[in-house]
Length: 431
Image (tube, rainbow, N blue to C red; front, side):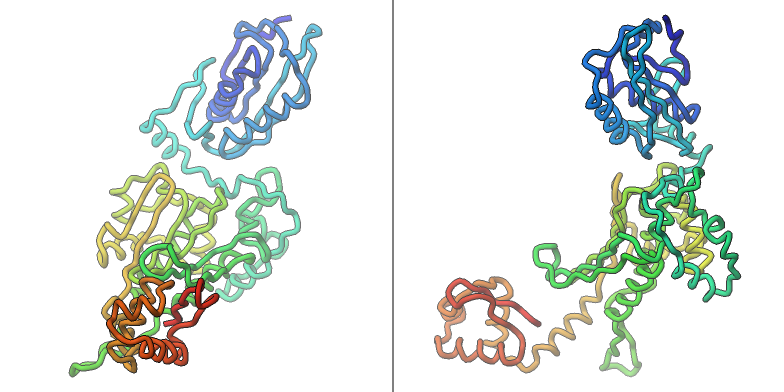
């Protein structure tokens, strides 16, 4: 028996030694026709030769390779068949995403060939089909989702709800009628965790505080981060001039734009939430996935929007959490320049500087009750938290008794604490 000729939805491979090439063929057929069939154990001309050493492990290997190789993920139908008493593997795939990659590259079927898509052609395909909204096409394994928080947010904004159609109206189902990943991140209880981490100094060497928001409707977590940063951004009054001047630690308007954009445009399908990192001199807002494939840096800096998660953006917009005017990026650039943005293939980091002058004035006030030698001891401890009393004596040229007196004062006034023993412990700086 002969299975005929290869075509735009049919591919033959002699054996699973050509598994990677077979996965590429499946992705290219998906991109052209939304489906494809692949046989292992068949020659290119359709002659059946059979697949040697075929067992359940072989089928699992094929399934795993397809799962790992094709993005967004597809669930293949894999069966072992006997044709002319020769065992072959038949793989069928179907998908409704706009574009599929195989091992991070894109291909499209042309008769019986898999043509690699050039960057220019990829942009044309994305522009013609639109960026695939992956989080509404990707099913979640959970079936016990509820959306009371999301419904409440819409009611607060004055929207009338149809409970029977709410989930359909919010696009919370795949085409197959299963909850999608957007439904999971918007549900009352989920596994999404958003972190705000404060570090000591200007790098990640020492972590001072880690605050976690999440495991609830994403919109609630997003707002909680904004509330937390509002508290941090305490208003201070600058004195000494004829006019009252109010100052903040950082520009909250820029932070808010950067944070909301990160939450809307991060590639949620990769299940890496955005994060906020706070340093002594800056705040970083980190989102995953880089720029949308149809958007270049020049357009991005001009405020052109090509949303990765269209339906999620619609929900943020309907709740008036974000607008689609595209003014956020130009606002940040007007304040801090293009250098505020670090853009790579997989990450976007927005840097918001901290008001150093205000921090330094506050720092001076914090230590106003310390004399020169007490400040020197504290500074030495900050630079070396394992410094000993003897080393302090030698560095500062003061007596052992005076060093011990300074240490007692610093402890009593909660500037420092001791962790561990006197011999092998370290100093913990509290202020």
